[in-house]
Image 1 (tube, protein in one colour):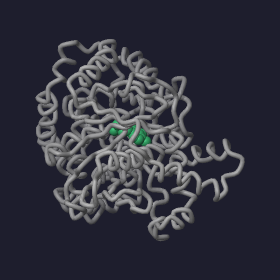
Image 2 (tube, protein in one colour):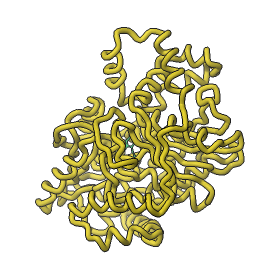
Image 3 (cartoon, protein in one colour):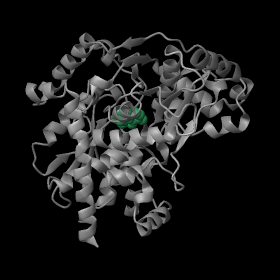
Length: 454
Ligand SMILES: Cc1ncc(COP(=O)(O)O)c(C=O)c1O
């Protein structure tokens, strides 16, 4: 296990046409073999033709005039875009000579997808890995992590108990051999999403509506994805950024905490890398609506058709989203309604992964209802999609609201050893711009590494 890590630059992940032709061709062939390390060069929102993987949802489903554009994370190697931040954090750590293969074991605190990304990336780049996650997540997650060869270190609880995984990570880090890819606090996660996801969102709306982005809606776990909003705002200053969270765990809205069913989001804290300066609204979404919405997409094709969705399109939606993807879709529709957006306007959101890791979630839903017949799905379609309102939205653009968010962030992070001074520096956009600009330095270093290997 001592491969030399090498892979794409941030710029190449955004635009794969910049990859050397030979690497691009080999990476294309590697898609058939998941564990071929050339798949590192397939970390991108682009497909082989250079188009962004996305779906524009049918209006018969969304019920709004605005275009709801969903970027699809399931086409990333390992099945979710979380592999991007995992790679970026590891390669930056290697460049900084802090994380070396054979010498260090990688820790990946996660509720699942980041853990899958970490175990996958460590497999490709030759690192041992331990994923620290709650013991009550969907089975599909544990299976994948084990398949990619990482060890599991389980802490009690579920989605909302991510703080326990962080505490366990800090404990394991006392051994200098262990290095954490700390997605909640390390800025490569921010850099990946601001540069790669943000610019991919900008490209995703080309030729749709007015070609601009009116709003970006995303439910934070680590809040990495939300950083795409910083790029979107730089390109389209009128754009609004909407953070979504489970109604059952309303941490951003009012400090509330609780258990919920939307795996990957709503982690009971304001993460260190969440740039709250650019978050305009916080919207709560009910977890049961997300699970029922997913059931309709997977098993309710006839109901969608009855409501006017073209059958082929209804079929094509299957397998594209997970539970948090449904949360983001419901949140995007809510956003379009609350901002009174019209047919020229675009709301962009993200489906982090696809349905392949949620069979057990729909099994659980079936277990909770006697029988889910068509008349039940019909009612759920009305409840979940037709009844989307403009309630449970909080405007956090004002300075008082920002202060509340800063204060909570302080409470969450002083205890992990971050100084007040550092946390205060995050109150300025300059901090985020400086951090973002570091992607250029790392890109140069990655290219130098590749030259050395040649
Ligand atoms: C399924 C799923 N959705 C959403 C998210 C949230 O993404 P981010 O961590 O970039 O905020 C995650 C994060 O792990 C996830 O696994």
